[in-house]
Length: 394
Image 1: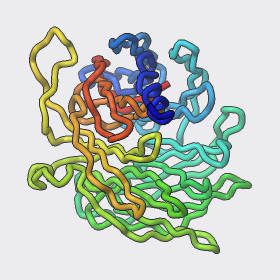
Image 2 (image 1 turned 120 degrees about the vertical axis):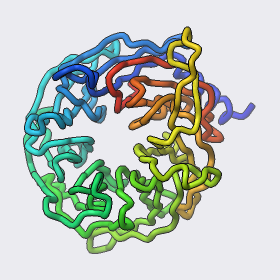
Image 3 (image 1 turned 45 degrees about the horizontal axis):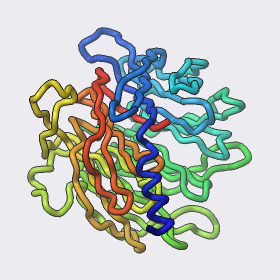
């Protein structure tokens, strides 16, 4: 057996004991119920909840583990948009969290965060608030820096989802010089250069998506000396690959190199017309690209409760393999384990994937083959209640 094979085999077993954080909205049946930050433990084939914290507001929407020993959580607070907030939690050795600070956010509907400028700054994308904000970070204390809005802009043609700007993600480029913000409502990705001295963002020309596509999330990928940007589009369930060009005088331009359905070549497009693609992420080894599909049931899976023999409907996770030219080769479509997998995360060793199925109130763990990129058998499942929308490996 080669050294590489031995290393991969060792990695594939390293998640046999692990902990995760999952965040979610509170039960929709409850009035003014806070959401939750749960700690999950996976040991000897059993996934269970070991703690719950309800101090992150009504609709915690995103967990950021970019600061050592801390978890940053944003409260989307779409019931009361004037009370959106950024919460800081201390991470304990056993995976539990303690609430340590909260800062009000002046723009409503925050849905994702991105630390940048050597973690001296934080950017927040606002879906319901139609824009973005930036903050300075001094030893974990956050102060508002910018408040940028996209009110009264030309929107896409689908009024139910494109009734205004809906900035959904904040993404740092590989050089650390640029931040990108996909805007589902405006069919555009906003491009900013980072002023490393002040931490402020300087706006450049948008990357325009095809009309009605609704860009939601994005991720960068490098191949040799080339850089690519993959953007997932919620309203058509497609991924577009762009080659990124860095202008000598500053700024980014993009060349489209590929476009693929998140349901692959074998699924009838008529079946997926009401799909709502969500998360997009590279595997830790950067050899595969994964995407989550919502609102189109393609499989039935075992119940979370092993004592219940009733099978349940499942949405899906798609896997592609990027080629050196940025084109995407189809690998697999696999069950997510429930409905509306808003978020998933592959373990750092690549051998496992955790999926938060928002509308099914569960988190599922599956094995994943590091070499082929294929998702395999379920190894754990737990009901967490409410609407889980973010899951992170600790």
